[in-house]
Length: 233
Image 1 (spheres, one colour):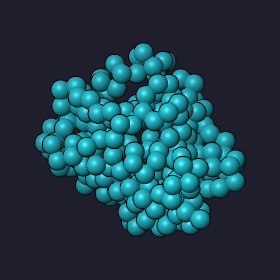
Image 2 (spheres, rainbow, N blue to C red):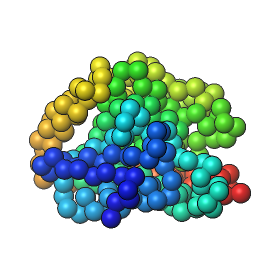
Image 3 (cartoon, one colour):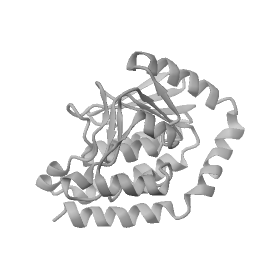
């Protein structure tokens, strides 16, 4: 069952998963686990596509570090994040990130975990942990699959996110949409284009992603352990 901070809606066989936790849609252990469980359930139901987005005008501001520390749930969050990012790489349906606003820190990692990323003009995308005196331990793993090495290192070291134009030029996002009002319609069109392969694509897509993944889950687990060392103290 999804948490109250996650809304799952259907449009035919397309499932929209919207984070809805405060003004910045910050991730905690409960929300990360709800996302992982929802992705697993929807994949089992063989939906045609999954769309990740955020409530309001923010996609996701990352993990709620102070909350994880105060509640002692850093390990629970890290384990859920490993499952979530692994599942997103393994599902048969295409995963689209409808970035309706800033995608920062772990939220940037979530966007990068999608197969196709569309973002509204003016959104900021990237890690910001360096500005907080820490490091994007988990987010750097999915980000490494979309961000060119030098640009990713600069972002991680400085904590300065990319503009949508920079992200598009670097290939981090696939399209810029002028505003949120047009985002849903464009995502719907992209989903239609991305599902024409039918059953053959559902078999082939996880195999293709796997060719690029390497030791993805192991990399995520190592990053999760480092995250717990920082935020579980």
